[in-house]
Image (spheres, rainbow, N blue to C red):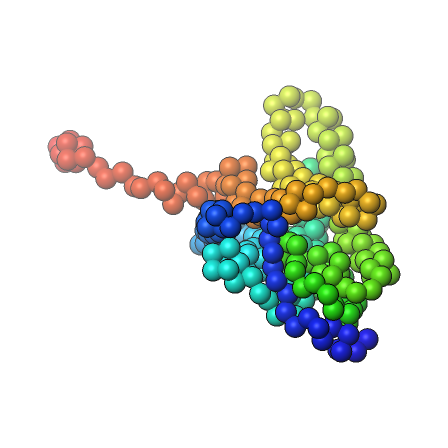
Length: 324
């Protein structure tokens, strides 16, 4: 379809929350800025710990490293524009810029899904095949799997952009969302959306449900393996190693699957509620994940505590006693 089909729209306007009154714009921008700041600080702390502590250079922590990078990039892709929209009333984004943001949003979301798959694989092998774990899961294995995830994840978002970009956009240019995504953009097209939305839905479900199917299988297998452990203390200790990952996985998958399914099977709810749900699953995981890493992951917690512990200087009396 020719470029003339969308010549009436040269830029889009990020509306954000349609029901938000102007007197609350300052509050909204401040909250979003604090979320972005805390997300950046928390994830940068994890990156610094990883860079300075060689004890963290193990397979599981390399997986976390990739998740941290993806979280920071996703937040940087989405939050600055909506903050500018409420702080400086700068909600306009160029036509091409909106599609670039759409690609990056879906790309980093897909990368996260694949990285969570690798995380589940690591836990599955660690608990179900502990003796074979060092031979199967090595640093090199994680590097290969993670690099594959970053490369393979490009396909689905690229297909979505290629199919959506040439559509005729000749009416409204208001994105009823806090960032450009496939649903928000294609609903503005002056054509039947179904031939374009359904393939995108199928690809999105494959990117989500494919890894999720293995994740469910792996944690069911882990539960069976844990129940075979004789001691109660051993069961609790083994389950505690997975609790952090389960929280991260639930925060990522459950709201996303709900939004994708509801949008395609006809479940209707208010625009503001839909945007709130989307922002929760977009903002909460990158914000909360560093806390989960620090409090639910033993070696990261120990590495962080070492940074706060200062060596105790000997007291004068102790020095005198030793000299005697």
